[in-house]
Image (cartoon, rainbow, N blue to C red; front, side, top):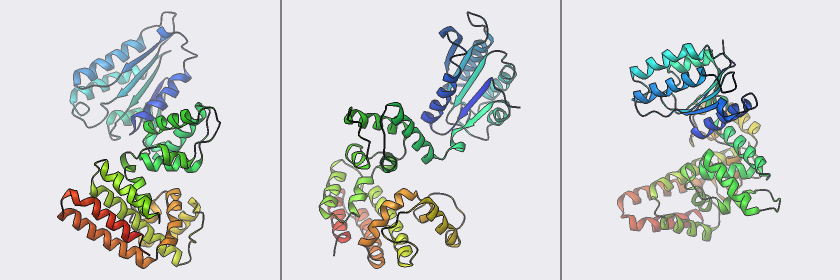
Length: 364
């Protein structure tokens, strides 16, 4: 039976886990109004001794009456030994966790919140918490793209600004849906807009947000397939001026070209129009129709058009009108040749290889 006194939040992103645990913590502030009735314990452990000490502190804090009587609100924040790390898999840590189960099942008037990241979901203590606590698995409850959207919308509302739907998706693509960075970028753009009450638009995101992480080559690939040769050449210069590598960019271009080929086939087959608004429902319908060609894997892959974000594909769909199927297949051949050239030629030659590629992509 789950407990209303013991709350657990786990997940794969420390920012999202901490935010959800903070929300739970704040729900109980009215019940524990004075600072002396609240305690936040740092749960990060480098050794077994640290894990044992952290759990002892939590037990002592929850078992001690507050200055004004009654229980206490205790937050075990950022526990990092519920996994298969050296500390997490050590017998001493497991024994300490086993010992603390009794006091967590008998908290009396106290409330304990435990937040943990990263975790191994097969860990025995996590399985126990699923039954013994009010349990939240951020990754299980929300897919990454939905969690990122919710976080950005809540942040915008909190700082009294608004953000267009397309701007959220563009931001996710540019920074790889990195939650903490997304929050900071929203605050930065809101500060730039000042008191104008203007919404954060897709154009503003493109102008002000640098590429980061998985979105590291977003602008370069946008320019490459844009039909604007000047922008494509400038993007290649910028990419290599910043000291970025050739092979990841080449991989990004190949991935996007694969998606364009698949979209072109759907357009040629009459399933889509190049000016259609691609919705999630339309994509799901087409996915069911052509499921036999892609198998049952739900992993995101550019080899499977239907595993992609509908908004992202909606951005690519208008580009299909710029390329015939034959031209996209030829471009894929050019990309393969460029890969061979990158491997064979010195780094100083890589910018020219990509400029030649851009010329091929924009040839009439």
